[in-house]
Amino acid sequence: MLKAFSVLSILALAAPAAAEPAIDALVSAYPDHLAGHDGKDLIWKDGTRMPIADGRKRTFQQMLDDPDLLSQFAIPYPLGELKAPAVDEDPGRIRYEPFFRKMYGDCRKGEVAKRLASVPWMPKRGGRPLQVTTVDGVNERLADVVRDLETLPSSMTPYLVPSAGTYNCRTIVNTTRLSVHAFAAAIDVSTKFSDYWEWSKRKDGGVVWRNRIPQQIADVFERHGFIWGAKWYHVDSMHFEYRPEILALAKKGWPQR
Image 1 (cartoon, rainbow, N blue to C red):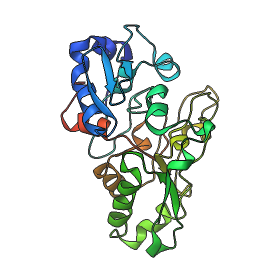
Image 2: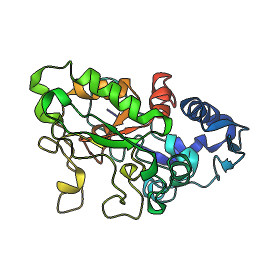
Image 3: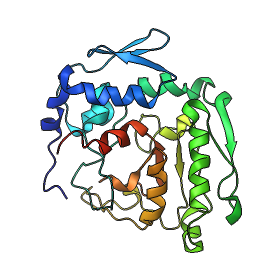
Image 4: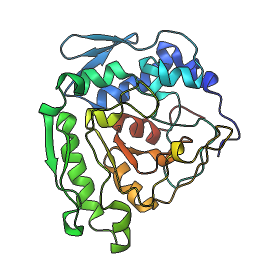
């Protein structure tokens, strides 16, 4: 576990050369939508150009509330066995909302709902179908997750069924930021054994981190491109969201801690 976490030191990676591995991973993860980048802008297949970095240094909270595209990669995602994260170590929780709206649509304009597909959730264990986006084949990846989860022991069922949901056009609790659920690219498993930092904050506002979701479940999700909210200091252990670029970078060991 990290003894301390310096967001600003990691954000020295705002230079275009340092950004290249992250943006390469982003382009590779979404080939149906992204054409490439030139070190300064991400280039979409429709010709849209999206700045990679604006050069501003940010605190952790500023990255959450007002990130640039590169901020999404500021915190390395840890693969393998779960360990308690350091303070503010929330890999993947920083999201550049214009990218997600461009990719999946704006649910407030009805753009996400028309791209939904039904995916049977744990049908052999009494689960009910869920609605997820077809963009980037997220529905197909979730179906792959279900196939593999169904092979796990029956002792895993209470952690998975019933699901707490997928598509929901809403903001994140106590923020104005859209949830990944608003893009139909996230799923919450059962709340029965889940932990969420907003549910267990100390009186001084500090976070109480813990997790009760088995590693075997997370291993399946990660194998198919979903990151796990239990690997955040601001824990959301029921939450999995489709972020294959984050996992691709983690497998390459980038950025270095």
